[in-house]
Length: 470
Image (tube, rainbow, N blue to C red; front, side):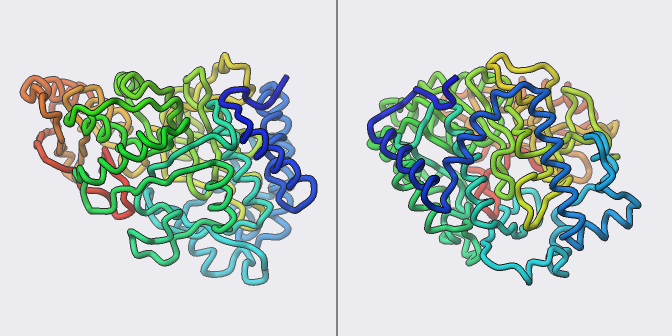
């Protein structure tokens, strides 16, 4: 079986891939070798992947116990010794960690980083709460990059093929240009930017960097760049595409044709179908928080995302840190099996999601998780105290063709207020009637609901648009 996609192959692609192969053979830049290994791994059977995962987990746990004071002390205080583990289910005996706990451990040098050299750091975006640094050695950075390549190749793109990205203003690639945060940067930044410019032929679009959506001049620059560049693959956040679609319709512009689109976020089924039709694109998703690149990615079957069990152990837990059933929404907890410098072991990311039992028909042995269900802290609550995932709330608004973008906020009193930017030709009264009916069905008639028409939506401090907030 060939592990490289035949789609989008060009002479330049062959040149770049050959160059990567030479680098891997003759230098310390071994990303291509890591990538080829990952490509092979995804076609292993689920049983073979489970064996591989456990071997890697056991090695990580044994090494961490011996070398990382923070975890050794944490595990001793919980009366658990992972060196005695002999099966995957033993992982449930380990305590779960979060950003706050890890940040304190960093401040106390619990990872022994003061004695380490030759590493660089990445920063979390702060979307799910506190920001903190994650150190990477050059080899670990290359493994994360190889994981990124596997996600991209799964959609049919290859090195050397034109691509474009439209991220948020707080993304580390902008080095704090729009946020004023001087520490915003990617690890091994110069090498990363050179690879993206030359090998990925990536054009970076200027993101919204004001406090609100609604800047038509900014959107015009997106449209003009994409129309001129005509990228094979476009990567963007969830709120950008509906805004771009509305702009094209309002100004009666020729539609864009983008063969492959990675949308970092979750759409309802109807909105995804409409955007795919409008942009003549095939849409993919991936789950890649800054600190743990490549946790899951979608394939051309488009039923959720494949969990990279050769690199990460991903769990879905309830509020008591017990596993939830397939299809049930749980808090996502990840163990990174690659970063030994600052291990993330049973790390609560701050997101909620769900997984599937059945395998994908594409033939990959990696199990499936669904598209992300949102941030843990933004789950809504019914009058009866039940938790409702942000994706369920967002779907109500995303299913309405008269809605461009929105923000639904639930306060401490459980009241819900929704700011909505409507399409210019929307039948607002009918739209609102349907929205009210579905909110009542989801949250219960006891929850007060207010719908407010607005011209723009206020962005988060990092430049993202949060559809659903608690």
